[in-house]
Image 1 (spheres, rainbow, N blue to C red):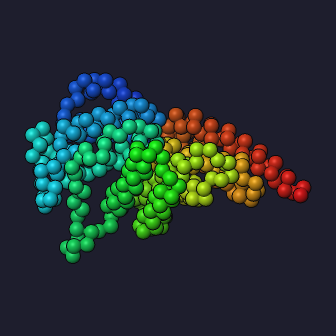
Image 2: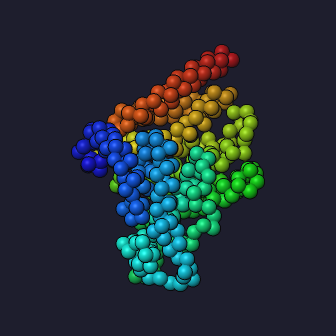
Image 3: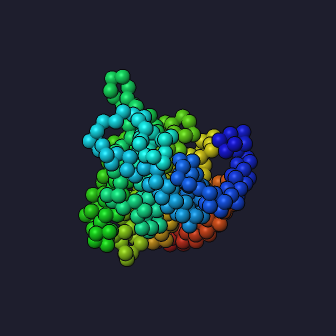
Length: 356
């Protein structure tokens, strides 16, 4: 139903009803859940569903449950016995508790878990559920053309690029675990590597050229992820500094994210991937960067341009919260109140410039 474009006007009611029904069944499921693939899938999907409704504590609990079940299913040790072997795609694991997941499926599942673990650590400061060295898993097999060239389908590009982002994030987190912080030189190196990945895969062109909602969503998610990582990496080195010294890379990332959302808002309204969680998890952080720049940057033209972006985002957020998630209305209210403050500051700056 949620993917049916003809029901887009009912998506908020449908999604809220499904979520509330799921929550009502949660306690019973927790008592009955075992070590089955279906329980792993339920826990992992519920983690993302809870995040979509801003219930991050439940999301975290479900993610840890998914990891616990995954370990019992052998997802973390699928290649422990034959790391140097050459198992054929689709071979079944010998784990006694499971005979329905192929090795390749387990590998995909593990790397998705690892990426999610990085997300919780990066955004919420959580301790690692998957410590380094606690797994023995190769990359999953990617289908090959007869000539041996891996096709660059959107799903494959998404997996490869998101894993590169995850490894970059792991390096950053390792700096934090080892030294308590990352140096400016280390952050600069990581930011350059992120930009290199985005350029290498030409993600923005692919996003704008995508012709179906799924591809559009996947490329947008990759771009938002890269922008978020750039901002969070650079912010980590600035414990206290004047707001006008916000790194230019962070400002560029924030502006690009809003431009991407603006392009997205012009796509058909039946797009099922206009979710509040995607907006709240990424661009809201970027909006606060731009609002800080508006308040502190003495350049009136720059402040006016950034204000136009934040106002555009506020309008989109309010519309999407009305259509899809009532919880998002509180977020839209906060963003638009701050936008009004920024608007007044820009007006004062413009008057001062005119008088000069």
